[in-house]
Image 1: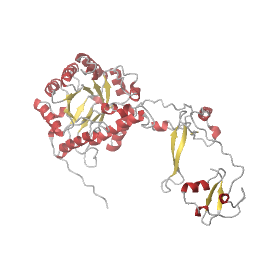
Image 2: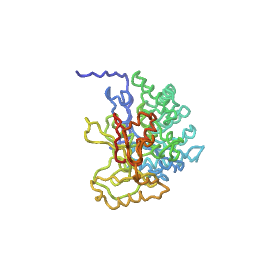
Image 3: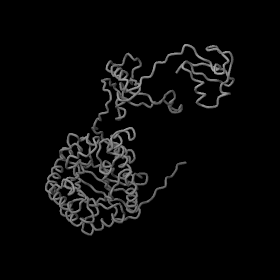
Image 4: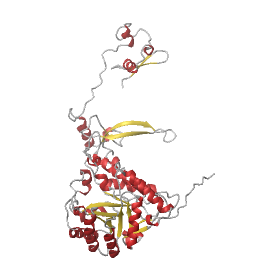
Length: 484
């Protein structure tokens, strides 16, 4: 008997916004359901990822974040081009941070020249972002709007203090505005009403509810976005039927956790920052985000796969991801099998590794097979490694691989502890010796040592010697196994 899934009927839908022209035209919004509830209705457009570009070299960024853009950080135009052409950005988010009066305080004219140069160099939609200083943003974004006249750029943040001036610029230059309010549904609606009263169409407004990073207030943002989306589609509140914009990149990468270096307590800094950004983005997508601003290409690819899998959209294009300096031994042995992830790349055939655990697969799933947990190792780690190989015979492993293995096993003793070679004792002492009932090496009677020892650690000491493993069966007989 088929199961009928109950579906909720919604009264409203999010406005659709379209930007660009030709093959680079993109649309966003249009949802008539809760985020990714595609079993209930239509989610016509996948959420979009805007890669953030700064108008100056951000020397304060963590090294893991600067690495993918190291060759273009000094040039915002080249940076935007790389984000578009190499990392397949849906949009470019140009942050004019150098105009901040509390920072470099660059002029509006300089900012306008930068924005125009970037706009002319790219074909994807452009978001031009100020510094959240209401007075300076009016000056800067007005100059940008005039310099980019005729281009469908998006400007922000627009707040209650400067909505009149920037609203007028939007009307004069056919711009889309990002309306920023401080994590409150009523303030978000009020700002949209104020912009509408100026004549700005609701189809030209994107809501920025103010985003917190993972562990830094993201739950407040999520709750407000949830309530806004609920009012938009279930109560048909027209003033809240706008797409969401979440500027999460800075909120993630400015945290102490993202900046803290690698260590035993916090783990690898690069992986930590990437995961923090990816988890923050995926969380906000589940709250209804239509545009998320991101930085690291690895985090972006993770989020793209998440969007494709959850929403049923086309799989993302492969990006030319940066190769991190993992300090692994480099060998030339590369079999024909293709590698599908960055993790697998470090564990391909010929890599140095150690097996952490081996587990049998369920008989009903894969009889006769086991799965292994494998960790890659390098010279700086203690312990002995093995070399992965697809060949059955050890002699078929290429010479460079053998040399790599020898280089690890011959590492200085100060960096790894070499296990002593097993040497059998000259004679074994039976368990009865402890009771004074036998001569060394000459057992005279059966004896169940479990009857007189209850402590687990003591039992293990009795059961294991340097020559044999001993154990007792139900009738008390002693048997011996080969050493482990």
